[in-house]
Amino acid sequence: MDILSDTLEVLRTGRPMVTRTDAHGPWALKYQPISGASFHVVMEGRCRLLRPEGEPLALGPGDIVFLRRGSGHTMCDPDTPHPEPMDFAPHRLDDSSPIGQFTVEGPGPRTVLVCGAYKIDADHRHPLFTNMPEIIHLPAAPGRYPVLRSAIDQLCAEFRSPQPGSDAIVTALVDLLLLHILRSWYAELPKDQTCGWAAALTDHAIAPALKAIHDAPGDPWTVESLAARTGLSRAAFARRFAAVVGVPPLTYLTNWRMATAARLLRESPSTVNTIAQRTGYTSEFAFAKAFKRHFGSPPGSYRKPTVSAPGSMVPRYDD
Image (cartoon, rainbow, N blue to C red; front, top):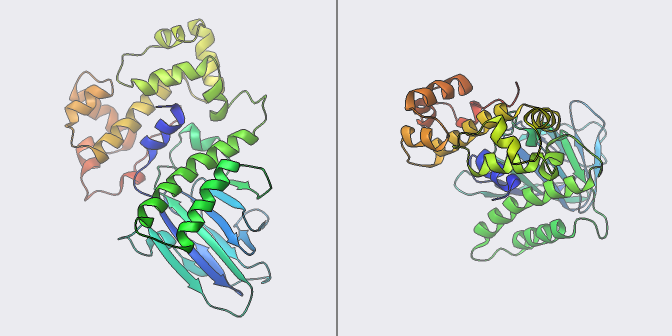
């Protein structure tokens, strides 16, 4: 599996939720913060995105906005100077289905939005998210992001004319959108960018080391053995990795092992001892000690459904 796909797969904590909102002016919806990431696609009409900080963002038909941390914000019609928003949490409309519908009646112009919420540990400090801006705006323009536009067209078609199997198709398309949004954003970055997660994915020295860690997090990696994958000396590799990724190689390795272990605890029936071995620990005791230091809770408590949601106990990618 490639590094980006693998990272998203491990950081994901549940299926995405998506809601189609049909709003007639005047309208304003206040989206509460979520533990994850979110997006909006403007299917029809115009609107504004308002944040506690920063200027309003004007959006038109076909525009896409991605919020990497699912931070609180307001969506509203473009003609109301000081809107009074209603609280809105589309991902909580109906937990029995990943798809929701919401309507705001009014005499004014119509706006149709598709809004999605991704259940991802986006608040932890993995470079995939920390290197992104808070908001990514991909404006509609002829010929730009053709594959992303195709996925959006399919998503809109399923909402307009639902058929048997639409729930599964919409969920799969929303998952696909996340990858295409990130790809489109990466494509817009300066070609000479030399640091950050996007640069790491294509860096001829760093990408092989990252792939080695992701392919086999349980292997007994050292700075020397990772450097051997890149053709650099130990010291040169360590400096370059820290400069590009933002943390030293073994810090990234430890944090990736912890993220992988957390996913296995959430999603697999494997014993703690098995997970310890798969993530590079020679004993269950050593693994449990490292896991508790990382998350603030031992593996057994993390796995129990009575404890706070796993997304609230997050691994750190800082030094």
